[in-house]
Length: 206
Image (cartoon, rainbow, N blue to C red; front, side, top):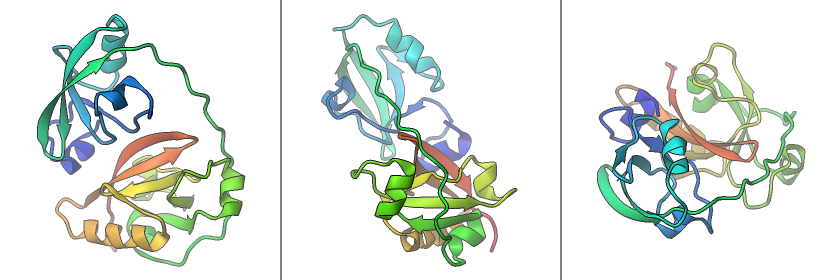
C-alpha cells in the first residue's frame, strides 16, 4: 500500500493490506472478500501494512472464525472469515515478448509504455492460460513514470482505474482521463508471471 494507491482508493492513509486476487475456493472467497478490498483489521488487530497480515494470519489457529474490517468502494465493511490452511499454488514462468509495439498514444506519451493486444501467439510466448484477459506491455521507456513506479515489459494490464481493459485503446482512453485529475495518477491491476498486483502510476505530461 503506497500513498498513491491509498489516494486512488479514497483511503486517507496508506494503511492496510490490499487484496490483489482471491482464490475461488478459498476461505477469503467464502467470506466475500473481493479483489481491491483493503484489510484494515484482522481478528481485532490493526493491519498497518501488508507485510503484517501474513504474520497475524499465521498466528491464528485454523478453524477459528475471525472478524475483519475492510475498505471497499470508499467505506468500511465488516466481514467474518474462517481461517484455513492454504495450499501453495505453482507460479507460471513467463518470457519477454517481442510483439510489435502499438502506435503513439496516451499510454505511450503519458506513462511511457508501448502496448499490444493479447493474441494467441502472445499467450503462448508468455505461458498464459486462456482465462487471463488484458493488454500486454511490450516496452517500458527508461526514466518514464511507468518505469519509476514499477511496470515491466511482459506485464499484463488487466484493469485501469478499477475497469477491465481488453485493448490498447481501452488503456489509452482511461490514461487520458487520469491525466486531467489532480494529482494525475492511475491505479492499475497487473498480472505478472501469474501473480496479480496493484500499482499506482503517476501520469506524466503530454
